[in-house]
Length: 144
Image 1 (cartoon, rainbow, N blue to C red):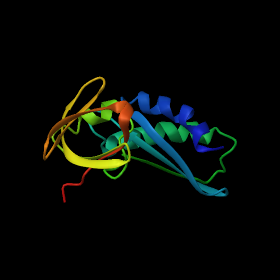
Image 2: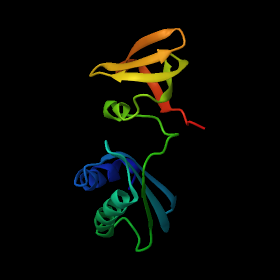
Image 3: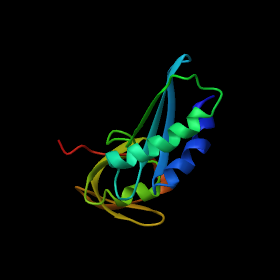
């Protein structure tokens, strides 16, 4: 079983809790695999949300014959260092500093707006509109 096989099984567990599956990472030894589930939600990710999703995902994994009796399941938010992957993720970061890579060049600015087609990034020289289709990578810059 590979990461891509797990995503369709895990996504419904996230959706039941109004969360979005960002990524599933399967690592570790075959005899003791580690399954990491990264989730995000428009209202933020709490420990209660992660616990609820973990219980549901655990039930799904427990019935899969590909997993040994002993595995580690970790459910968490993607963290500030992971790139934004979906347009809806940008809305909750309006007003924050971001690093956005477009055409191989990184631009750092403040996210000022989000539309259906893209974002408005305020740079020192003025605001720029960037289409989602042009964004190669976008991360929120840590405030520290």
